Structure formats: C-alpha cells, structure tokens
Image 1 (cartoon, helix red, strand yellow):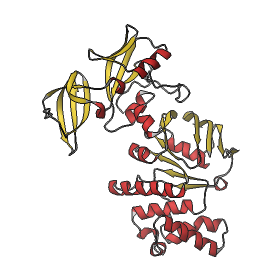
Image 2 (cartoon, rainbow, N blue to C red):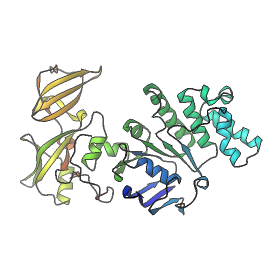
Image 3 (cartoon, rainbow, N blue to C red):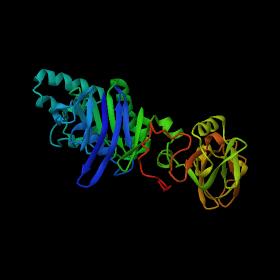
Image 4 (tube, rainbow, N blue to C red):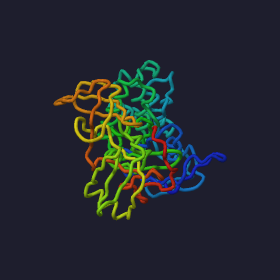
Length: 382
C-alpha cells in the first residue's frame, strides 16, 4: 500500500529522518512510536505530502507519489487538534471534502449519513455545531471526515492526546473496532506505547530520526533488538543490570549477573554460536513480570511495595541497580513489605543480553530488520 524507500529529510543542517525504509501492507494498522522529536510525525507528513523528502521515494500501490500534491494523494488525515470548523455543523464538517470534489447534494447526503452511522454519530449529532460536542464526539467527526472521501489510507497524528485518560481508553477501543469493521489501512503516530501496542498490527520504533525496530507488539516486547527498544516498550520498564558478563565455559554460554551464573537455553546457545559470539561485557535485561521472588541467589531490598489487587509492584535495590518486580498476590508466601530483603531469580531464556559496547541484543539483533547505523545506546533511563 505504502512504501518508503531510503527517505531522508533535512531542515537546513538538521537531519530529521535518516534512511527510512518502511512497507505498509493493505489493511494493516501501522503505528509509528517513539519519544518527542524522534521523527514519527515528520514521517507521517512525508507520507501525506506536507513535507517533501530531501532524497528517497514514497510509493503508493507501486506508483511514485513523492512529488504528488497533498490533495491528489487520496489520503485521509486526522490531525492531533482535529482541525474541525467550530462554527459549522457536524454535517458540514464531514461533507467538506465531498463539496470540494464537486459531489452532488444527494451523493453528499448519502455518504455523510453512511459514514456517520459507522462512527456512531446520530442525525441529532449531525445538526449540531462542532463546538457543542464532547472531545470524543469531535474525534469521531474528524475520523468521519477523513473516511467519507473513501481514501486509500487514513493517517492519524496522535488523535487521542487531547482527551482525558478515561476517554482515551474508550476511543482507543472505538478506533480498533472501526479498523476491524472497515478493513482500512491506517498509519497512526503516537508517543503512547499502550496505544501502539493495543492498536498496531505492526509498530515502527523510532529515535533520533532512525528506525530502531519494526515488528509486531509481541516481537518488540519479547525480542527487542537493542537497549532503547527494550527500555521503551513494556510497563513497568525493563530492569537493566549493568556490569554483567557473557561467559563461554565448556562450550556453553552463561550470563553472569551479580556473581550468579545462568546457563542459557538451547535457542540462545544456538544463536550465539551461529554469530560466533565471544565472551564480553553485557547489560542484562529482565522484565519485571519475569522475576520470581522467594527463590534464587540474587538479592534485593524492597524500598517501595505497591499492592494493586491482583499483583504487587515492588521497587527494590540490588547493589547499585534499581529493580522493579511485578508479582501475583495469589499464593504469595513471601513478606514483601518495605525494608524486607528478598531473594529473586528468573528463567535464563527470559534474560535479554545486550552488548555493553553497542547496546545491541546479542541474540535478536539482525542487520536486515534493524538499523545498524542507529546511534549507540548506553543510556538506560528511558
């Protein structure tokens, strides 16, 4: 549907996008995720035609649209601010694009009515001014306006950021149902990983103008290619243990964390051997959800214990490392109150192994699926 080939975007001396290569398939919900200033909105604006790349090409259904004007790209856009006309009725807002394209009044009425029903806007809503609607209703108007001209692609630029937390959850579900019902191709920009993980078929993780990884939500969670992706995806964030080692003893690899050796599983052994991996200093990453408390040889002191009903969030200190543990309350027979010392461990196959020098995952980094030119990531505070 959309293919970005070697896209670079420069503003004077500032390089906003660096060699972006993305392929969005028909009907996919494709999410661009990253911190502020990473280049995700610039990528969206390049797709829609608001920005022309310094080099590279944008293809839609194999047709080069790099220099095609915005109005001729057949792309519907939902802006962060919705960009609705506040004094016009909902009906006129939705019909605006159809009027520009010189549709007949009867066709406009039919199309507006059809699309309004698909986004749960009633005839009563259509007669109101946009200024009379709630934030969630205005968002549905913006989506209806983007859909009514039957675009090939819908681009959404942080459409939920202006809503309160409760409404964001509701509208997230509405967008997911709308995508399922219409089968539309959607390109969605957000800095909220919950939105990206729950909505996206595939997610592009960006930082400093580079694509760090593209994959399904599950792939990004379980197979992060570098420290940045590992630290950006997942709540609470992944625990990073600095000054660890990858050992090779008797033909087998071990991860040494705080003097405790974990024999890696068969898959990790095979991947490391195929890569010819030599012993090295590593950063070991463990998800809070993958920690078991009350057994093992690692030790930590609990500083904060948060009881959340079905689980505890434990904030602890292990030597100089801050460790967060998410453990179920059911069947827990360990005292996890503040100030208590606890043993903890994890399964070796759940340990992520990051090269301390490059920040790349020794098992999952793949030059074909990750950008080897992305800056070295040594900052674990995401």
